[in-house]
Length: 199
Image (cartoon, rainbow, N blue to C red; front, side):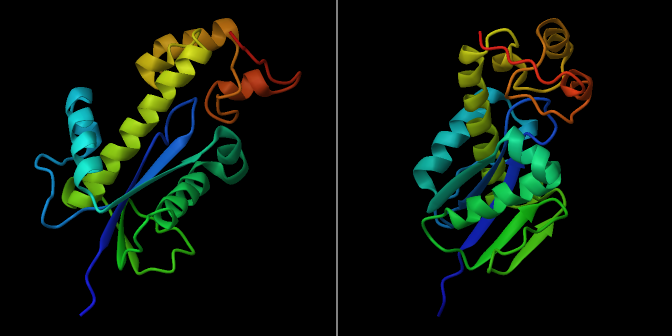
C-alpha cells in the first residue's frame, strides 16, 4: 500500500515593494504535527519563530524557493510566485504523493496530483506549516538585506509599502531589491534609468 505523503505549499511576500517572493513546501509527519499551526499572518513573530523551529525539527521534508525582483518583473508576480512554488515542491527531499496549495492557482509541471484551496493556510495543517516557513524565511532574508541597505528599514516592514518605506524611496530612490513595476516605483525606474543605493 502506497504511503500518503501530502505536501502543503504557500507563499510569502506577494505584495511588498521590495525583496523576493518566497514559497515553501512542507511534508508533515502525521504522527508528529506541531500544535498551534495557523496561517502565519494571524500569529505573532515570536510564535512564528517557535513554530518554525518545531516544523523544521519534526517535518519529514521542507523546501523553500525564492523568486527575485528580476524574475517578478519578467514573469509578473503571479507567474513568479507559481514558479517559486513549483521549485519548492521539486526541492523536497521526499517526493510527495499529492500537493495542496493555498489560493486559487496550481503551478504547471508538478507531475504530482495537486489542488488549490482558498484559505488553505487556515484549513490544512501542512499549508499552515508552509505559510510559517515561507514567512519566517523571507523575513530573515529581508533582515539581512537591511544590513546591506540600511536606508530603507527593511527589518521593520519587510519591504511592504509602509509610510516609512515609501518616504525612504522618495528620499533615496529605489535600490536593486525594489520591484520596478510596483506602485510608485514605476516613476523612479521610468525615463532616465534606475537609481542604485549601495549604502
